[in-house]
Amino acid sequence: MAEAIKSALSTKTPPSPLNVLMVGTGEYTTGFVGGGASGSDKKVGVVGLTLFDLRRRGKVAKLSMVGTNGTKFPAIIYNGLDCSFDSYPANDVKDPDAYKSAIDALKPGDAITIFTPDTTHYPIALYAIERGIHVLITKPAVKTLEHHQALIEAAKKHNVYVYIEHHKRFDPAYSDARFKAQKLGDFNYFYSYMSQPKFQLETFKAWAGVDSDISYYLNSHHIDICDSMVSQLGFVPIKVTASAAKGIATSLGCNEATEDTITVMVTWQKQGDPSKVATGVYTASWTAPQKAGVHSNQYFHYMGSSGEIRINQAKRGYDVADDSAGQLVWYNPFYMKYAPDEEGNFGGQTGYGYISFEKFVDGCRAVNSGGAQAS
Image (tube, rainbow, N blue to C red; front, side, top):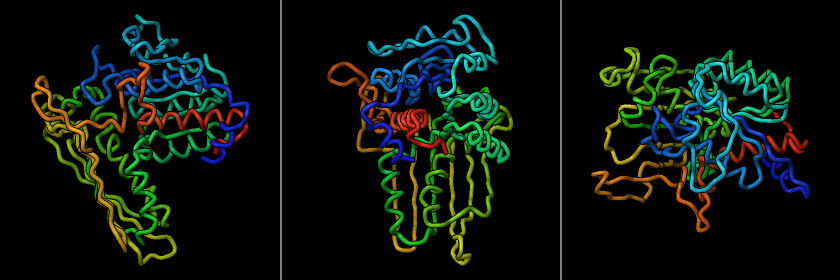
């Protein structure tokens, strides 16, 4: 589809800008948590800021945003960028079903982004798909195979583009590793680790251990990366087991079912040659130390029959010592770079968090123009 999108967007008459509804107004969309700015690596959001900038660049037209609570909307602003949008519900209203009226205000060919608790992804996505709306869903798309298959069938039936926002695929080191893995023989072993500090549990307390867990939230990144590396070599998963640690999150006031660290072990086998078996071990935690110096430790080790790859994306050769922080901090501008350019505009178009959304917008516009197929 990539070539079709490129061809469609390079025509003399470019596709029309895309109207987008942002569903979910939490940390990832707006950068706001509990009435104030987030303390994570998403201090002014990702979704909203990216789409506001894509509108400035002419790829996006009308923007709207819907949450269960409209009270935070008036506070969204960034350095002179046009951050206007239609909001649902009204700024002083709380309504858990506000997404329906917001989607009803769209027309076929428009799009939505879904950044809401995992258990809400399926009903919101299906409601939009059935109305001819393109859909971007944060990972995990849904939590059951049945729901995955239902969304695939609905997308085919209504000819819409459904895109899972796995932004680590666009991390330059990870995407380069995926290419290099093709030349390292058969897949043999993969180990990954990804974490976030304990304070994030304050943000996630309402659903942590109840509607979702840290494996769905973080392990999904590396499992997707591993799959993208080894599926091209003919390997498929044939067995899955998991183990968890607990005791920290519950001491911080989370639900008693909340697990701190989850390790998933997957047995992979090569199609057509059952003698070729590989092991994948994926660990994720949201109880890392508060002052680790990085918001997310993330690394993996890939081993093939004729070579190996090691990537550590926690410390990227960029550290800042700040008296107010009281520690050394390692930043990741390759994900989202919030510093403005020389003209004062948002300058983070090369961040892989930004690129992931731009790919979705380009895909929707190409489908709408007839230059690409939705599936």
